Length: 104
Image 1 (tube, helix red, strand yellow):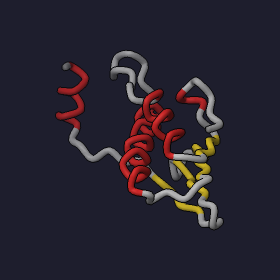
Image 2 (cartoon, rainbow, N blue to C red):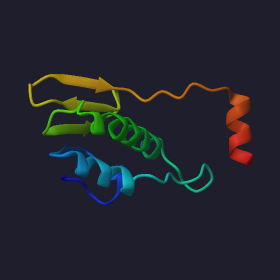
Image 3 (cartoon, one colour):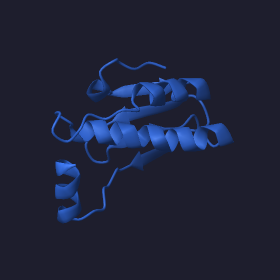
Image 4 (cartoon, one colour):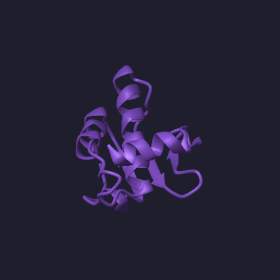
């Protein structure tokens, strides 16, 4: 796995095996709180980790898998076949719920 230690500095990461994905997820499993300087990238990278951790053990990922962090879409996944897949993280919620979560 080629990734920096700063979660928001993730620009391009290449995973060569499931254990590298699990290491990535372990490193990015905590997201700063809403009032602790959390950035959208923190949540996006956390969500990417959840997705990859869910599908990797079932053999649904072909390696090497390269992930590029962007803005829109949030991530581009480059498969060994050359196929590119865009991944956009979207949070569906209400303003009232967001306010409650900030106060919690």
